[in-house]
Every structure is written in structure tokens, then in C-alpha cells.
Image (cartoon, rainbow, N blue to C red; front, side, top):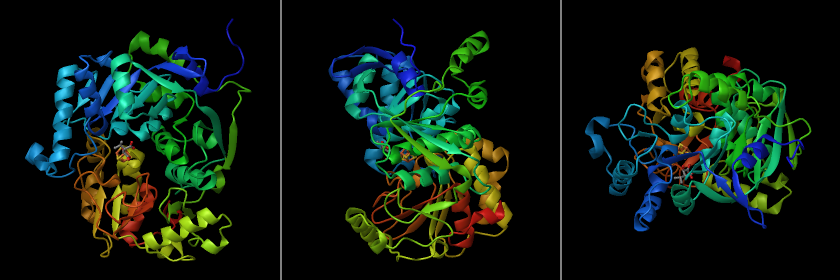
Length: 477
Ligand SMILES: CC(C)[C@H](C(=O)O)[C@@H](O)C(=O)O
Ligand code: SF4
């Protein structure tokens, strides 16, 4: 008998992909798309080789090199990668793809190379209703396309390569409903940080978070990707947004997306990908979109969020002793004081990029701010990087003349890659450098040993570069 009870979007996609379920609830889940990057795939390919196995379905694999690749000096080719381990990972991926085949590969130095989570949707590798995995936690990004997408470990990567399935348990359902509308100068990134500030980094533990409501519907696909990207920082394994016109239009004409009659058939199915009326969510959270301000993080966890017009919080006012201790430690690490106005925080580095905010809309928002303020990067800023999330984002931005806006103002316009999001390539901070960063993690040492990270939107980061401190960017929108 078919189950006709109302289902959530997550349940619909999950159930469609279950091959079998064990008594303890462990499901064998069929995987449609396997995204692969150089850091977490080498061991898995090696495991296959040792067991004399091949990829079960090489056409499910879309791969690129992103974490280890440099964002300057591309004319030197591979010689531009100075770290031998990094270089080995990049060349090993080349070799593995050559030996095993795939649907599409964007190697280092190729036109389409980019951060896997920027380049994947851009190429049409992610379609609504798919199950998507990658050996990378920010695979949650792709839930913006109404796909069940989540990160897996390297041994699971090997399992998926060998069998096209994953052993997993169904997650709980959580809905974050955002009413109203985000104000001008407030972006998906602010909303993501605001939500994490509200529910905490464990708020979504064990859950798939569906983002819904008018403020989500109003977001572009890029904005939805930013939000789903950070679902993982809220403790969830995946984020999701239902299919609407924007989703369908986004898919049209993308390289790996269906065409003609097949597109029409696919669209008919895609349109069913929303939670049914009355579907049960284990946890429901409501946010007033009108009340979301521009925010930045002040500490060493994405939940340590503060409004631009506020002061940093006072640990003695924190009732939870564990949190209080975390705050105290964060103040020491960050070199900040309680009750400091947020607008007095003065970054000396700016990083605009990453799989959170390296898309064309992000680059446009940052360029808009730079143009509007009409001045150069503040003399106190040691380095201001703009790193497009992919080669195609870079091309588009250059077509629009955005690169020139940045370069004329004193920013560095770089090649795509993960760059300063994490300290795995040449783009690193020195101890105690303070960075306004559009990435997603501000843990101790994330951008380099003893580096200090303030997460914020691209517009906020751009304004910080020009003003030399955080400012309320609502005034310029
Ligand atoms: C290197 C990779 C495994 C890692 C992740 O899983 O997220 C990285 O992308 C990150 O952002 O920390
Ligand atoms: S940009 Fe940052 S968060 Fe995204 S995949 Fe790369 S390292 Fe991970």
C-alpha cells in the first residue's frame, strides 16, 4: 500500500532513493551525484584500486581541484604549487580521473575550475530531487537546488564509488520559516549567521533543515546556496529549499541539465518537490525576516554573532557557565574586549570568496559597495582579496567590469579556489592578523595559525576594506 500521509521535502527525496532499510533503520541510499575534490578522494580511489574495483557509475562523478590550488601565478602551471603534498593531491586527482572516467572534470588551470560547491550547480551537475554527496561538509550548499546533499567521510567516498550507495540513517526534519523580507543591505549571509546565532551551532544536530517562507522565496538561487551552505554550521547535515520558478529557471540551459522534452518531463517532477501541507517537522523555528540586521561574528564559533549596531557581549551576563568560558577564551584569542562597539573592530585583511560567498551575486554586491564608497582600500588594510568561486564567475565578473572596480580600489583580483577560507594553500593569515571574511568558519587557526576571523557578508567585507573597520552598510543600500 502506498503511504499517502503528508511528507516533507526531505522525506520525499530520501524515500525515493532508499534501496533497502534494515531493522535498525539503516538505509542503503542510492546516490545520484558524487562530487569529488582533491583532498578527500585520493585514499578512496586507492582503496578501489587495491580491491581491484572500478567506479560503479563514473557518470555520477563531477570533479575539480580547489582546496590546494593557488590563486596567483597560474602562468607557472603546476610549479606554482609550492607545497609538495598539495601538488601531489592535485596531480593524483588528475591521474585518478584519467583512470576511472567521470561525467565532467575541471582540473587545475582549466576554464571551469572552481570551488566544487560553486562550480557544481553552475554546470548543472545538481538537479532537483537528486541525492548528492561529496567528501566535504559544505555539500549542504546544493540543497538550495531542492536536492538532498550532504558531506561524507573518505571511507564513505570509497563506498559510494564502489557501490553507488551509502549506508545512512534518515535525519530528523527541521523547518526554519522566515517571514517578511530582508532589508536592503541585509543578505542571505546575515540571515544564515543570524539563524545560527539564534539556534546555536548544535541547533540543527541530526536534522535536515528546510528553509521556507516569503523571505526565502525572495532569495535568489545564489542566496539560497549561501544559506544552505551554512546549514552545516548550525549542526545540520543538510539544508533544503523547495522547488519554485527560480529553481526551474536556474536549471535551464546548464551544461549537464536535461534539454527539450526531457527538461519538460523533469520539470513536471521537480514541481512536486516541496513539503506537503501538514507534513510533520520535529523542530520548527520562526524568524522575522524584517528584523534581521547586518551581523558579523566577534568570536571563534559561527554562533558568536553580533549586530553591526551593537557592542560585543559581556561574558558575566552569560548564564550558561560553559558558554561563558567559551566567550572568555574567544575574547583572548580574538584580541577583543567585552562591550566593544562592533564598528570599532578594525580588520587588517579582507577575504571575499569561498563556497559561501564566491558567486557572481556576491562579487556584484561587493563591487557595488566599493563603487558607491568611491575610495581606495584603507591604508591599515594589509591585503584585500577578491577570489571568484569559479572560473565562470571570474569571467562573468570581468565581462561586467567588476574586476576593474576592485583593482582600481586596491583589491587583489585572484584566480578561483578555496583560497583564504582555510589555510591549505598559499593564501594564509599570519598570527593575530584580523580578517573580515565571507567564508563560513571562524574556528581557531582556520585561516592560518592564530588567525582571527570575522564572518560577514560580501558587502560588509567590502565596506570594511574601504573604511578599515566594520560599518552599518544599510546606509549605502
Ligand atoms: C577539506 C574538507 C574535508 C573540508 C570540509 O569537509 O568541509 C573543507 O572543505 C572545509 O571547509 O573545512
Ligand atoms: S571554500 Fe572553504 S568551506 Fe568551501 S569547500 Fe573550500 S575550504 Fe571548504
